Image 1: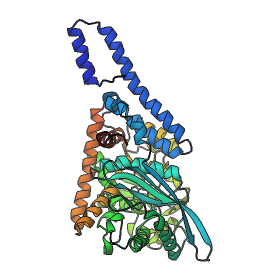
Image 2 (image 1 turned 90 degrees about the vertical axis):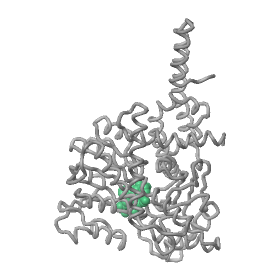
Image 3 (image 1 turned 135 degrees about the vertical axis):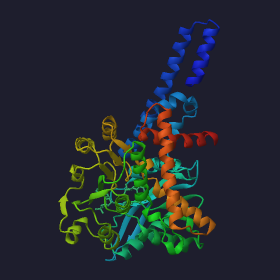
Image 4 (image 1 turned 90 degrees about the horizontal axis):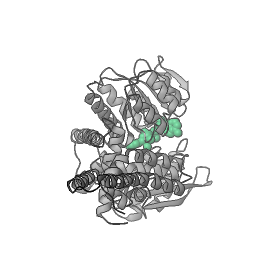
Length: 482
Ligand code: NDP
């Protein structure tokens, strides 16, 4: 079987006309070959679905990426020949392990730990650890798959990986969290290293957890290899801006999309789901740039503060005291608390930033947002919008900043943390913030260019998938079959 791309097809067709060969016969052959390349996507997807039938979130993530790749596959038969789709959707390695630990009542608890080393073709595996009761292998695989393309888009030399545990840090004492982290790392340390796999935080894993994890890694290895983890404290190799990076990066990206469409972030009304790391720093940066954030949430419900959310209160409640968002109203009597976290999307806004978890915006929420005139949706969380909702939003001309691009600021700052650890030096806040902003602008430019080149117009969802995919696919082909 042979495959042609469009340029080759045109050349061949002209050659046929020149030689007065029966062009109709030739063109039919060519059409069949293009159709063959298209059915390659369907066939690959079918096999991937069969192989991962118990992992719906993973299948959702794969379908979303493959949807954008149709013109890429049509133009590049080399991807078909290399069977790149099936290979890119199969992790290089999946590790599942037992994590026993002792709680404060001296009871022995057991959790499950995961690390999926998805794709190392452009750098060491890199991606966060999530501690949340909903974590199972399907969640880790979807996050790891997304991470491949996000890390590629960042322009930095990092491969894709992800991990975590079904451990729930909520309501646990610091001592319990420490014992869990130590047990988790005893096993994980066999599989990671500064040039192998570099985890970071995600839901339920912040500075406290990274500290406990690194302390245990150092004890077991007997070496100060601090670039094995990112998101560290500033006293032992952490980077300035890492804490703020995902939220700040998200706002830089949204601002760039608005600018591209001749709009300004200033005075726009903004609603943000979540009240963790990403949501807090997105709120801070949005307000710094003149937008007004009027609502944030946690899993119990949301608060609406018409005077604008006070970041200092959020930080105190969520980062220091680890309390519920409902407590916010005690400090700001004008604010109201409403149960049901998804109801936050009923609030009219110009900018919606889902920064909590996956599948936050389904078709119902998308319809409400469109009816209320939303201009832009920036995905701070990973896969917060269902595939059906993505289609609806794009059809209705909403500017959609996809997670792979819009929340890549976190992993980019992590890669900058690794660079500083390697040269044993720390850059200033201003220098890192400026690098972060440039990275976000470059991601936008590259995604917009790819979208245009492959016939999607200005569609950053498709453009991010294409630009992220092509770099990794080309690296895989150059490195042979593995
Ligand atoms: P945090 O743990 O700091 O905060 C998570 C927030 O989301 C909390 O307010 C939490 O509420 C809420 N939330 C979590 N799960 C659910 C759920 N199932 N239903 C409703 N609300 C929920 O996490 P981050 O801010 O770090 O992460 C948020 C999102 O951003 C995730 O999708 C993560 O993968 C993504 N992300 C994070 C990066 C980072 O650097 N931290 C980088 C790139 C992406 P509650 O406290 O009640 O559980």
